[in-house]
Image (cartoon, rainbow, N blue to C red; front, side):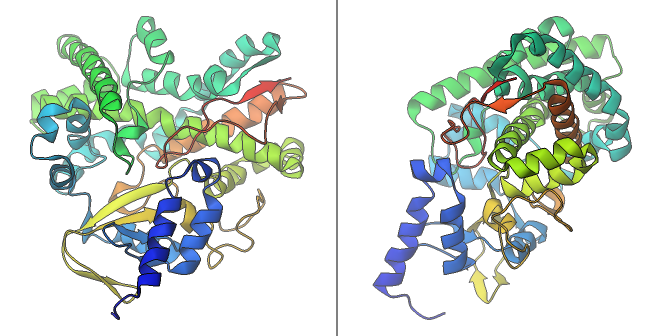
Length: 412
């Protein structure tokens, strides 16, 4: 590897800096294009590697020589007492999201049964009934914030049903999630944010511990009971792992779907010909959801740490170095997709990396796809004249890892 010039170092740092600007939050894709075109794999001085082509991102996500190494990474970044001081980071560290083998396989193997393709496909009538009930409530109002009034409620209710959360407790979850995407952002949380996150996690942990105890005493046909029985009968999960992974399933079970529905509606309304195409042919919805996942991914970043020295794309990544895979950049790679910055719900051979890859592929990917498909088709059918009030300058959530809208005013 040749020594870099001062100009190259500065250019790479400038590109890195653009990932953390307000302009990037509004529209990340011009910056991601510049990063990919500069070099699909490079390491800015003092920072992590940035992988941005489809081929390299996919390779890193699938390569078993990479993992999360979460505990060591957090201790290096925040000090050895990071988990003792922060309930939020401690919780994430016990979840399958950031566990490496063999713990990852042990935990995920229990949850994967509930998210198998056959089981999820069987849930479609239940999902349709929830969508219909939500739209029955919305239809007479003629306008609302479609994020809080619909896109957020749908996956929350679905995951509440799967976990077995009593219906009387649903309102607390429908008021807002206690699991924030900011906890997995590469930008550090402020002290004020940490106080809020830690308090939220402690509150929700207390609730789920109590619910787990009730399921130990009175088992039911739900996912919480299955996880608790794995703890008590097989010793496969610890009590802390049970609580952490219930919270993960709840948080991850709604965040990506909320963003998929919101981002998808915005993209369709910014491309009215595609919106009209879907309205005229609802059978296109399955392919449309794949294209919407590719076009404006709910998840933009996924980090991996090298467990050994690895050579990729002619570059040596040393043991312990982190690679940030830029999923949004990979999904817009012209080497993979013709005219990648256009929305085309009839596009063929769409394989978005929006749900990650390898052993950490999103457990709820198929569930999110079905929820979004049912939601989009039913909403467009049930609400005549549905339109978004502001498609030019909507307000986005202030996170670069998860991409989603704070609100999306609509009328019909």
